[in-house]
Length: 271
Image 1 (cartoon, one colour):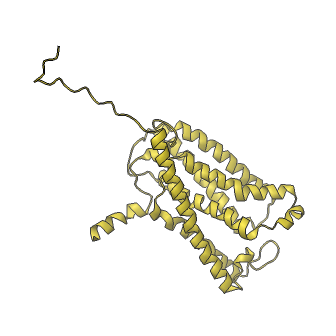
Image 2: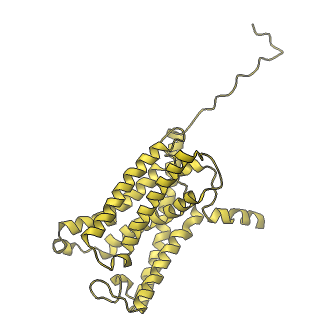
Image 3: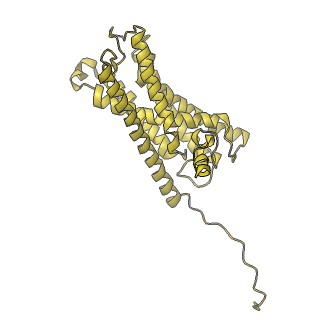
């Protein structure tokens, strides 16, 4: 039992250093063969969308507080994931590294960012529309600000889900600790921000009202619920990836192996 336990929870399983096929990180689930070109095209389009939203956010509301918000952390992670995915595709094209089990650093980086960015993006969208969005403020915000909110708290999640559905990137349940670690780190950052006397753009001593550490009990409950939410979201992503692999293997990637013709039976006289 100890051997089985160690094998199932080895470092290579918990980390993002090995996988059966490198092609899982550069080929699409919905193609025959393992050419990196289809997924490279898809990632280029998705990256253009994510970069456009990121630049829109920076231009529309430039302020020194931009980096304190979880939404903007998510934007940077989304863009980083997609750019690292493009790097994986380009490296395969130019260096011809098609099939290795020990992943190169850029594939491991993409995989870790994928696990964190996709989960966090969906979680940010859920938290914003459930806890922070106030429909009464839409007229006060203006149409441009409203659609920027829709882009940063909705379209980015769609971009991440598109990456999940189009790619073959594996989703392993033991990797749950990666998005959980990022969520926990942001909670710690918000505590440091509060204890250091940080102020948001409106002069409030917190980043978000739901992360007001002057009300420690309530905020601790919010953080604990958010951690549980990350588990649910990651489980959802894991389920989506599982269905993707099952369907694509059944409908698209199923191949028949050409077996060599059997030699004639020496007991039979074939003319």
